[in-house]
Image 1 (cartoon, rainbow, N blue to C red):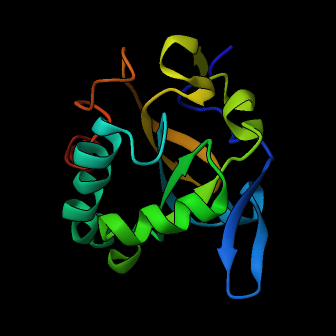
Image 2 (cartoon, one colour; image 1 turned 120 degrees about the vertical axis):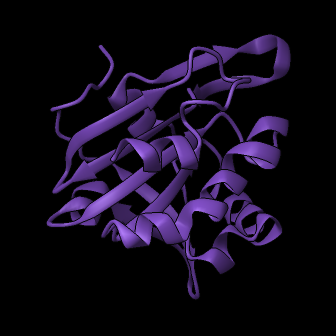
Image 3 (tube, rainbow, N blue to C red; image 1 turned 90 degrees about the horizontal axis):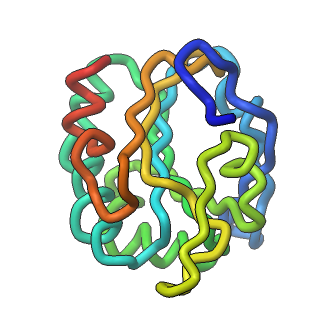
Length: 162
């Protein structure tokens, strides 16, 4: 069953690439007492994710800051090395967006938002969505019907909804 508005984010460990190498990041610790935006993509460097989804949050970052959002987090079922390179390539890191890996899809599966599309090589990947949470509770959730679409899950659409 997929997560919905009013639900608490599940505990899971994501991974970021720190100065000393990969570091575990607790979702519960990340969300506790904070306003966060999480947007997830089917894969780093994939067409819609790279050309539409991440850029929409780079463009709208200041608007989220103005609404008191503490952190914007991009999650993908990739490794932390790929997420670091992708953040640098898209300008997301420079814009202050955190690029976190859900390497084993544990968080994605706990949300109930995983899918598999073998013909295009996507196994245990995340559906495309964006959510806003306060103190770990989902207040707004925009889930795309198709992983190739980036309409309601884009930065501007989520910003307008919170």
